Length: 365
Ligand SMILES: *Cc1c(COP(=O)(O)O)cnc(C)c1O
Image (cartoon, rainbow, N blue to C red; front, side):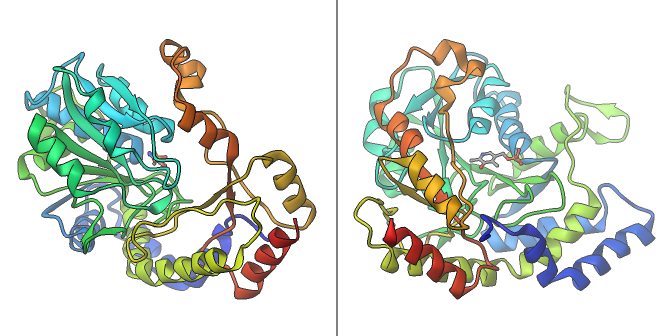
């Protein structure tokens, strides 16, 4: 069976070094807000090209803390609107709703599956305060038109960078493109921890300080609480793992690219629509997502031929019970994407032989 993502095999690549790092934390007797988190924050800031990284508990918290910090700072308030792509993972919306802000959905581009920037201005109202872009599947969603819109309407640009660590727009790394970004180190992400973990990146020192305070009980000095914060901190053990894995992220990404290019040039079955790549050097291939009109039989066929696939995602947020108030809205492109997408196996540990088999099996379909 060619696994969709073999996390065990990814860990095995650097297992000795990771175990040493974990043991260092075990032996230190210091498990929260220590030197591992401090050095990871510095390393990840360098990697993204930002002045500040704040480690937090997970990707959803990273996004909701950014918005909560903006509310604390008086930049936005309850009932304000945040524009977000309709086909994102539900976490992007939950971060908005959790702060009693309103998600305003905008259709993606059918070819890239990233937000269709030409449709954003039509969704802006006097209550719009931010645009949350999502670098979906590892492809950068930023462009200069987006920047023009944010400047024109005085909107904050927030990146959901959960799927795209290391992706680039004209040499600038995701996480450094907007006013603030939230990222996730969920084990299956390109930079995966051994449990939940996440981070906020920004070039705004005030925002970084506000997020850091909010994430630690609204406190900068122990037992002195300035705001009603929450507990969302990055563990020392997770930071130790991430410090090791970050060193290999671009090497891992290069391997993902090799697999992706093999697929792009090798898959020639006209029934399978390949993803459109805007900038070959900018995409980090968290997922390789194709579309087909006959998804169920395609997936079944691949399964019978020993190839595991997944769907990202089967139900769009506006059709979920969690968002009943949005159920009657219609987003035809989003709905088409959710009906047709299939994610093929891709990872830094996939072999050429495996990739060739996937291509051969698909072309026979
Ligand atoms: C994974 C993911 C998140 C949430 O990250 P968690 O660490 O699981 O909370 C948010 N947005 C997108 C697009 C994601 O893929």
